[in-house]
Image (tube, rainbow, N blue to C red):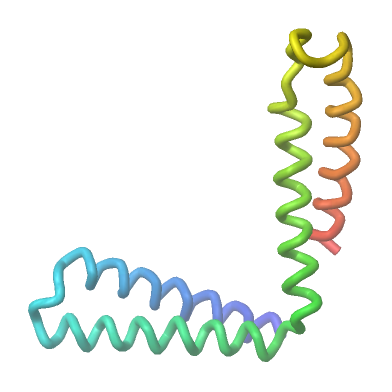
Amino acid sequence: MVLEIIIAAILLAFGLLSIYFSIEEGISDNRLILILVVGILSVVAGMWLIFTKITLAVILTKLAGLLLAGFGLFMILGFPDIPDYQYEGFAFSGVFIGIVVFVIGVYFLLF
């Protein structure tokens, strides 16, 4: 299973880079159009490998973990402590909730 995921990652990287470089150069050459088609096919093949080897529940769990970890980091680092519209020290509860959500998100990402 790990080998298939590595092959899928290589196919995705090759496909995305070939699409990027062929669009950046401009589509005026027939060889460039062929490279664009090969890039699109390799992206499709890489995504197909990923979706057939990994279940949808695992993909959704990892996506939820990424979103929760991002929200937790926002709550830890970017939660405002402005006394104009909230009580003094209210940011401590926001940071606490952020730490809890971040730990849950990292757990979903890793396990």
